[in-house]
Image (cartoon, rainbow, N blue to C red):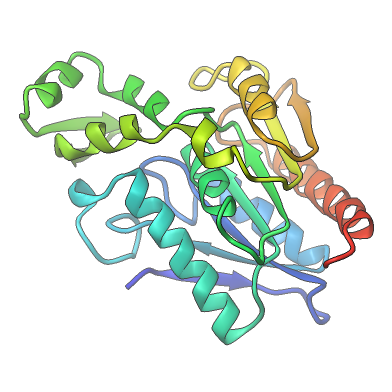
Length: 243
């Protein structure tokens, strides 16, 4: 079972969205929490959830990978579709944004995607592993430390992220994408935003965040991102006849 929270506006929602968090993060990470709340104030209901094995979701993190992340997103799409309304917008932070792009390529209800400080390929996350990557390549499980927390990683993880090529996932995805690039990001360089824009077939817009950090720790940055998503989505909705 996955743990999730649905942020709802006071009035009937003009759209439903899903927000996925970054690698080893949770649905309560500042970027996810603040952007979701701000979007709800703009009339967009947002389901934020913990990937398998993280936060309050069940399962073992060591057994997860990029494929399971996509499966978790699909489960969230199915939940909203059956209980409320099919989501038309997917939003993801960092690796969560990369997974959202992959999921959106096969999700008919999804009409638009927004990514925040996301790598263009899932194997980008391997930079967290340092010298331990060599052990994983030899089939030896390791523990890595991210933000002072330890996480067990099994060798299957690196094999999985390396088999996913986003060019393949996005080859047939003709959907608009809003790409937030954190200019001085210490984790995800700006060329990733450019590469995502080149890969998508739909209209892609890059928004540069000059003063933000990777996790949008300044609430004003999160509010700006949410406002941009809301305004951009309204424009997309006006242009796309099948909303």
